[in-house]
Length: 228
Image 1: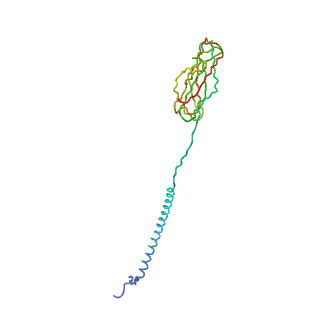
Image 2 (image 1 turned 45 degrees about the vertical axis):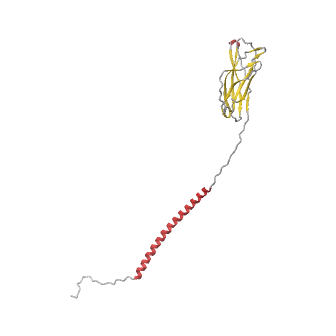
Image 3 (image 1 turned 90 degrees about the horizontal axis):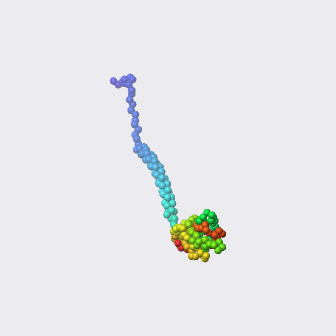
């Protein structure tokens, strides 16, 4: 009975070491220390991010403060604009020819003239005309021979406010041995006709076939007058 069967394993008892209280404490302490290290590293990263964000916000606030600190002010600019010229000039030497063999005829000539209104008042202006009778020696054409048939206007330089003309045509050109009172043949309303212009009237002269042959002359007087 006391003998064991051959081939059967022999069971032995091993002593289980007892865990000392100190060992548990050490292992627990190590775990807590490692855990604290992990927490500490994560906190540093968060603090770094917060620090960077704070710096960025402070920089933005500084730039906004600079913009807010800018000041605006107004200045008054002044300028003086003046003018005084209302003038008329012309270098025209108009002429016409008529052939009595062709019968009664109406011949024309033009008188281009320079008009300048740089007064800066906008009061307008008008043009007038008168004349002496066409004469050759002791022979004359009729005092009603001349008639102004139309006028053209163009701006010659710079910026212009074109004339607004209210005259209708034809307009009889006064004539006599001594030039009679002038008549208006072109005008511009207020606030127009400001600048420099070329004004060109066309004048027709009626020559009857029974006129005396010769070289006729007439003094034509044109003028610019303030107001429409």
